[in-house]
Amino acid sequence: MSLQRKGTWLATWVLVGWLTGSLTPAQGLRDAQIFAPAEPAHYGGGVRANEGFFFSYEGLYWTISAPERAYFGVDTNTLAVQRQVWWADDPNQTSTQGTTMDTSFMTNQFTPGQRIELGHINGHQGWLFSYFQLHWSGQGQIDRGVESYFHDENWGVNNLPHLSIQTSFGGDPVFGGVAFDNATMDIASRAWGTEFNYLVRTHPGERGGMWEWFFGVRYLEFDEQYDVRANGDPPNNRNVNSMLADTIFTNYAANRLFGPQLGLRWFKTNDRWELSLLGKFMAAWNAQSVQLNGVVASDLNLGAATFPRSVMMPLALTTMDVNDVAHMSVFSPVVELRIEAKYMLTNKVSFKAGWNGMYIGELARPSRMVDYTLHQTHAMGILRGMNRDLCFLQGLGIGIEINR
Image 1 (cartoon, one colour):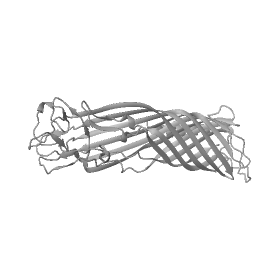
Image 2 (cartoon, rainbow, N blue to C red):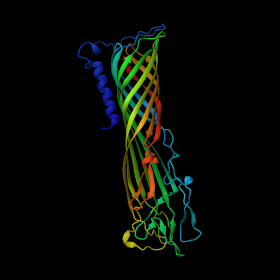
Image 3 (tube, rainbow, N blue to C red):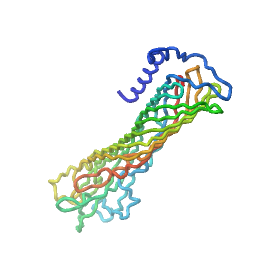
Image 4 (spheres, helix red, strand yellow):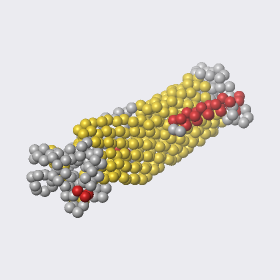
């Protein structure tokens, strides 16, 4: 069962329990009279804040900010030394190797989600449980005629780079170019979390506003997946074609954040309306897990037994698996802001809508963590030092609240 269905069933179950009074053994919700007429106050002090159990369900419509620009290959704009490569057995068919595909196509697209809150307050003290989820949100792009720069290390008996080729003109081996007929890039993200807080409510202020302090713990998970599929024809004895065809890999990063949380909420009522402002801060321990899997040059089909190879064929390259796993731990600050307005439909039931923003720092985002290097013993890897990206989530929430 998906997290989306679990969240919907949880909301339904709690609401049914609320309406039937099964959540309280004595008077509690049986006498809640949630459909009693609203009793708005037209004075500066506003309506007296409700007590007892409260529950809310919201539909969320948020965006997840795109990661910093990442390239399929090494960013050739920052290279101090460029590489001259050959594309055919012709001295006029050479050029500077480039990287032409990146993640600049990504925009801040909206994705749906939900939030459920359940709690109880009596006098000045209470508790709050909250759960939210944003569904997977993905973006992709396909480009044709894609170039990709790979760092290359010498290896093997002949101590040659993987991308070295021999022309018919003799002389030392030269580099073959890396290009693909087409390449597809996809990035998908999601976020979800839960928290438990102890509440402390203050006395009303002189102008009628009230404050609620939050002291609790929170768990937050941010997951992202980066997929690349680059296809082309393998080289032959006249043309380089797609030197690394086909290259396919997935880099998946999970950020699991846990830590103490402090929050403060101000709210004020006027007639049937209530305005509230909420801020939270969590000092989180982020346990990051990144996993890279795939294959490089799967269509080469030459094998080690065919050495030495003919003209324009890679002299040292074979099909290479891509496998790497990394686990890191960092401190990640989390800041959440919420602005919300409520309208009392009955004495205990309110319709609410508002804006929510959340900043998460020091995140592992997989598109910038790929090491595009053909190593001596393996292909590619994870850049462990590139695990300090950030994300900003923001959007609208609309829902129903009972007795708060």
